[in-house]
Image (cartoon, rainbow, N blue to C red; front, side, top):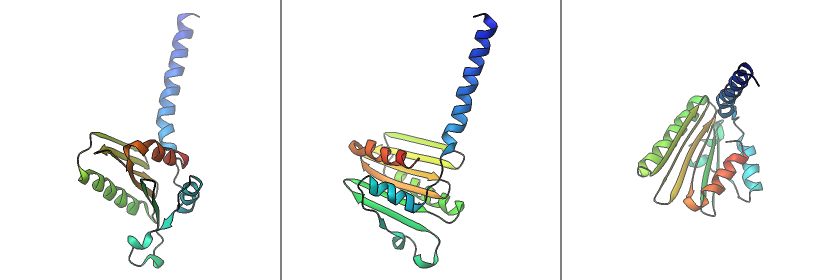
Length: 157
């Protein structure tokens, strides 16, 4: 292969990697609370509607909040009516995590309509994820982090 072909192949490879990195992370799509419930049920968790714990008049709001607390894993899924409300819930979830203590392992990612904050401290793994108008707040023992991350991956988060 001559130098020009090698250079062209390298440029194509680098551009492909950059294009994948730029679009791969931003391709997350928000799912509904019903879809989350189905995925959690399939994984063996019993999901409950907990909207009333957060919204005083849950019947009049177009907000749905569901969650479970089983096997050492606690998850709350918020389906909000606007991106602004979802951002507020996400910010509150991150503040809740930060208020615990500063984590020994902290990760933060923001990409378009997707944000994720995670921290591990005192053996507890915490995550907050924002995708579109949905938010997931969850925590578990560090030993169960792979299980929790697997559930999040199964829903595309």
